[in-house]
Image (cartoon, rainbow, N blue to C red):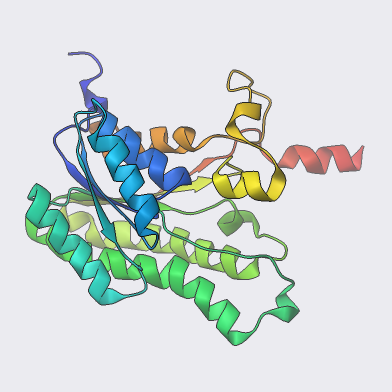
Length: 261
């Protein structure tokens, strides 16, 4: 049947940072397509709202909410165990949880720097190491890291965030090489500016303000990242390994051109 290469139904996925924004959009899109999802984050109330929304809808996939701080190895292990117990396998891991704040580099304390790197990079390490053990044993699995264009371009006043995301990009490529022999696919998505709840609170831009039919835009919506996450988890992406796919609309080089004119 035409289009079946994009099907991802019948699998089980863990999505970190799934209480809102991109993580929530990915979990909901996976459930729309018949994937059972374990949604995890530190915010229990928000997580349960996401899981209830999925379970009370007519989506074919089901959801389980599990509290998790990805910097805590024991909590990550509990998420993996809960996934196996509830759904029988871990087919997809989406490392979306992350954190940031804005400040000039010279104002960073050691604690400020290590906190962001610990969440964004070390937390991703924890999740991959724990879940990877199950995937290697199964001889199959898909890991999708959610990075940022900041990992490629840098980000003024967010050096800690940009550095951690650059590390995630390189981890993706290196791990894809090492773990291909185990049947594990590792790729990354680098979103540009996305109209999440955080962006709305900081910049006053909401999803309702965006004309999704317009090609000439530099802000997207969470589901536009979720669509790429669906693609990377599907058989259609089977020959893509170790890549970071940028999803940012019109390239930011346009700003350089305008400044030169």
